[in-house]
Image (cartoon, rainbow over all chains, first blue to last red; front, side):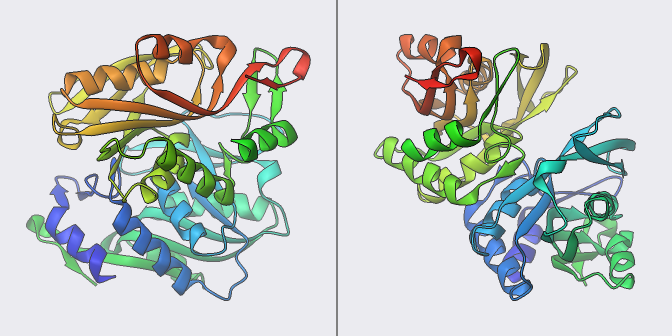
Length: 190
Length: 190
């Protein structure tokens, strides 16, 4: 998606440790015009798949999931809650996620009421690097015996390989911008 | 807003400790149709005030802030990040917030880049109880020397008094549903 790529080139910042900061339009500050276009693009890419629920993880994924839903018949959005410590209970599904950005493990939970075996799910998230967050949500979808039909990502860090590993499993992963390289602060797309 | 009140009466759950659970449509699962209407209502209530930025706090406020923006010319949304521990740095504004729900203090931060003295700000959030989150954002707005013109809330717990304290200061606070009482699990609105 050219609009997003231009935005990354113009306003994204490459920080040490392979960190791509896009908090001026996608993370802490949200460019709603851009988001509206991202929502339309996700709807186009995943049309005719019968999606009846969009799953994401707090916090930045929420905005993207909402705009995608608005363009896909206003299907419900459910977001996983992050916990730094293990949370135990019978009324929610839980999965462990390792965050490379923060170099620690955390847990994501979703109330069992909000995901069921009748659900046809699209996962939406802002970033995909090693694929840990998507793997955690996939784990929960499996526990709920629901059906996953695709993964829509705004920015994939292609060089970290998480997206390709998911594709190798036969999963449909659509990323609107895939950063292939950002050595020496120069961003190139796949 | 009748649609929201009906939803609270039909699907909200009153839990011990004065907790009102609305996570089936406003917190963990988001009813996008309802959100779209909430966005229109906020836009109607705060029109003609020259709002050029919407401020909220992660996570649940993000969805509401986005739909409000879509109905107010797609102005940027900025969300405060929550931290359990004090975070020190010169590149962000910080304020302490005491959460009665979780009975602990946390800190909210906003990157200094994303709020300036030229901003005319509307605060949007899902819940207002004691008003601590709004007070924290107001503190940050003051630090940035920006202008606050109103506060839009989905559900106010009127009996906790936070909303009225803000109104007494002359602040325009518009809550789409004000729960006045929920003793014995029976919800009544102001």
